[in-house]
Length: 551
Image 1 (cartoon, rainbow, N blue to C red):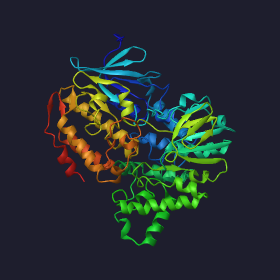
Image 2 (image 1 turned 90 degrees about the vertical axis):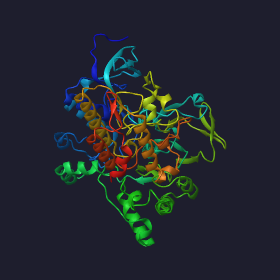
Image 3 (image 1 turned 90 degrees about the horizontal axis):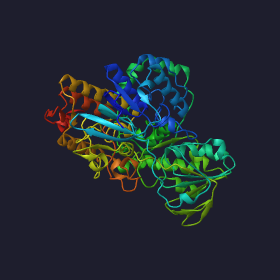
Image 4 (image 1 turned 120 degrees about the vertical axis):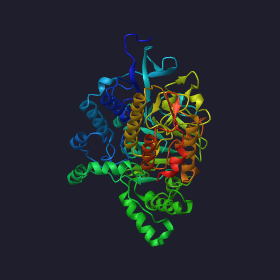
């Protein structure tokens, strides 16, 4: 029922991870009323749920954090190059405590519907308790990777052993000790947990769908002098991140793979492999993500590394990525991942060679045999970006449900708004840079831009904001034209929603770079938000021209 005692708020927000917390901070800074809702019992978002063994960020810690407060930057010290889940969650809790942000949220509360009331210019949320709450603007901070993908292989219901998902981990590593364990999937979470599970399991069988490029994380404690040096120049570091391609300090390269000799290319790949990170092998030459022949020099290098590390030639062959270019799917970073397949208690099954047909009470049955297991670990990924949004059942009388409006593919304006859904904003939504960036940088930029737009509308005496279909069409065209220049366009992956049966195929990110995106958004704001209806009026679209003008 509608809570008649609850006042209409300026901002309704879903999610209390990095997005929701910064949205709450900005709303308080503006003096706006704010009501946030979070399914989990506390703040943290992805980093509260993903507690599987080995979970850690693949963006370096000193960059994967908020930049809005210099005091916060100086008082928090990261301990490792790539922070583990527990440390990131501690950081998020620290932020929530320091800025008193929990008071803005209602936890253990799921939004089950969001309906636009056109006569009142309000959003009405329906909560799982049956209560409703109304607000002027609705912000979705529910995260791009927060809705686990359904397991799409028959027979799981037959299995009577322990089943656990990496995205909703509920046990300890000790619970796997001495057990026969199966891990299904070899994406980022599997790459991180497989070596640790192998250390305690009686036997581990890895069921691999698509082999990925796995780079050594090279994780290590952060030296005190490195931390001090970073803190001494944090403002400059942050500015570099904001204007870089991926939201981390860039290492610009202009030469191409065949501009150098075979010997020099090999030497540079070796150095990049030792350096690792997102500025490693895949970023060593300027054309690796644009030219398949150039990319093959890097992918061949990685396949050679796998053959050098993995002793069994057949296992090495199965682990070699053969079905996509390096970087066309999100690369993985692990510790002793390939080395784990040298252990006598680890075996590998290729689901391309023998599909799972069913499961029994104690085994996984494939086309070629049966594998007895006590525990199944599902590391099968997420219904990325659209899954969390569709779960909100966002609906307007004019456009219907969001999932129906996007039935032929995602349609957004800047990955932030969508036509037919007034006053609805997505923080790091589909067709934003969130997919291929340091997402905290993208989140801050999105929240800043959204709150500036709302302030602009308020100053204009208007309260209804919505993109035009023409401007939205322009942005969709820009995102598609941008990705079609790259090798992303050659590969089916969760980047396109290909991992979810029946999901319309749309590339779910803007890959023109964090810096260019920011400059376009800034220019759009300077020009009075072309393509955005504010109180029913819009400046001439011109977003395509802005894309052409901004370097």
